[in-house]
Image (cartoon, rainbow, N blue to C red; front, side):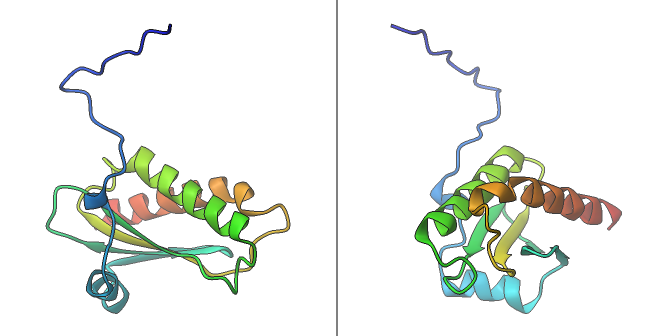
Length: 130
């Protein structure tokens, strides 16, 4: 059997927990009504707002009109959660909403990871300016 390394107590966790999700309409509406930052490209719009919590929270809006196939919607959500999970410590103190704004590319949702990564870079750069 394989040995699983045990992380040290001071090592930051990269798990994606329920506390890191926007859960109800009021939480989503607060970000939609007054975002502090907006970044976008042809596929995504990311809205961000400061929160008073120690962690970042993520909400996803991936509509069926933009990504017709459930496989693509699931792939986009999976990749958005993964990018968020990997950068959650840099994004601490923010509520984010990721919206799919353009039609899903022909290659499917799996090809959008670099676009999400670049947008999060842009968001962190904008946040650093304030």
